[in-house]
Image 1 (cartoon, rainbow, N blue to C red):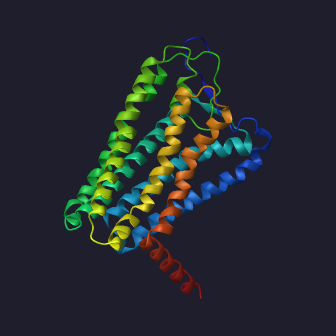
Image 2: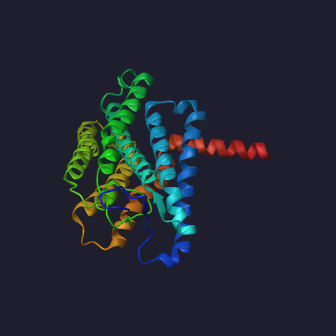
Length: 313
């Protein structure tokens, strides 16, 4: 690689200091990936096959499941490639492509969680108007807007990285490509990248988080005004799954962003574990949370399993 050029490839990192145990470490990763793949496919199958689940709340849950599948499929090849075969090399363009889709899917997940918060707010605060507000057409428009917003807001990022000069160091901090990670390998001025990255993050994920919090403030205000304690608990119970999904997505995401920008003194292992938590844990836990907490999903799953058993007998 010559001075002032793009590298031909980057070298990805597994778990620093534990390279000799990568084969063993791959076992829990395989379990999490398998749970994420099977769990989200199960959610999509149940919603598609159960007519009573063809409602806005479950359409948004389907969007969340598809997004989680996308995140899993983006990181699985490179992560298991390192753990199983020690394949660390990834081409520059391939790295930018993976990075673009990881960030797009993360932004989409954030927006879907906001849409789900809006859905809960309408269902609890305006139950009689709920069917007329969140029609299939409206849900479709929301979904398309979410995708377009993520794609447009992140479109400049690969080009901003391509214009940088890289000299010498090509080792990434993760087993996948992440914008701050690539940006910090450049030996040029990265102020534009830092500024645009922060603007994109705060104008999308940051605003989503603020709006989710405001939605729950309004939901709590509505719930408090309900007549009986039973009605309050019933209304709040419909939000538990969503609150869990919000927490397991936003906490690691905010943590990883802060570590990359301000936590240079943190041990590499902390950075790595937060990154894996951010990208692997939510896709694995979301279907479990919704299967346990949503009675409709749980009952549909039990019916599907019962039909399967009866057909085999």
